[in-house]
Every structure is written in C-alpha cells, then in structure tokens.
Image (cartoon, rainbow, N blue to C red; front, side, top):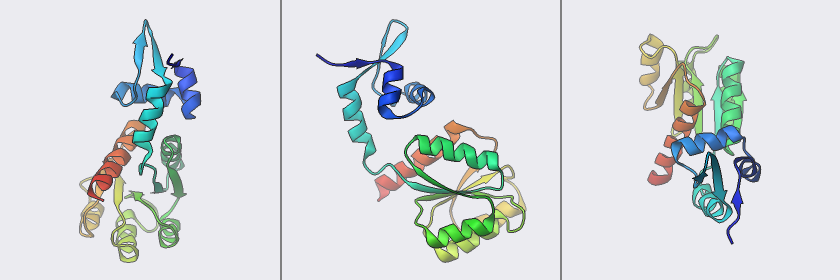
Length: 181
C-alpha cells in the first residue's frame, strides 16, 4: 500500500517550509493529489521526483548588493532550495569572493556606493571571463547599465522582485546551463 503524506509531513520530509511546498504546487512542479480540500503526497512519487530533480541542480551563488534586506531575501530563498549562497555587501568584498571562489552564478546590484556594479562586472570579467552574471537594477535605462552592457552578455533582473523572481531566474539559468553543458 502506498504511503500518503500531508502537506506538513511532506514539508518536514523534504526539509523545506510549507510555503515552498505551496509554491511548488502552484507551479505544478511537485507530484500531488487533492483529496477533498487538502493536498496529499504519495511518498514513492515524491522519492522518484526527488531523484529526477536533484541531479546537477544545486549551485553555489554569489549575491553582491549593498542592501541587507535584498541579500537576506536571496539567501533565505535560495538556501531553502538547497543552493549554497555567499553574500557581499559591497563591490570590493564581491570581487575578493570571485577571485577566491567558484560560483555557478552571480547576482550583482548595479547601483552601489563606491565601486558601482558596472565597474565590478568589468573587473569580474577580467578575473573570470566566463562567470555568469545577472545584474539587479532599478535603473534599466541608465548610463551605468549601458557601461555594463559594454562588458558582454549578462542577465537582468529589474527591481522590485520577490522570491518567485529569484527562483525563476536561478531555475532558468541552471536549466539553460544544464541543457547547454
């Protein structure tokens, strides 16, 4: 007989929050059935789903942003999905981490005090030319953005955004590199 689990049980089993389970349900990304008004999860189906989705999907991600709230949002959202997240509150700290670490992806704020994101992006590209970068900006039509564009291709994430935007950006990037790699 198959074991059915409740929403709370599946959240505990997967070591994520109920909010994450609801997000997966909303996108249709997790096998589930509605019994009356409640969701139920078949343990065998969940185990198969985990096996299919766990290969090559975890990444080490760097977030460089001077706003602590933004860094926290990225860290909590991405760690909940199993990614390793490193944080830098300014451009110099971000550059040092890039020099020392191996990141699958960098989220980089465009407008920061001191060295701005466009200059940091230029310096990152000199150190690691193939490092994928997504620029976070509330100023998509600015001169800084034009300077960043001159450094080569990158992704753009416009402010404001929430957990869904972060997850979509990372999943799209990881899926593209997994298919392309």
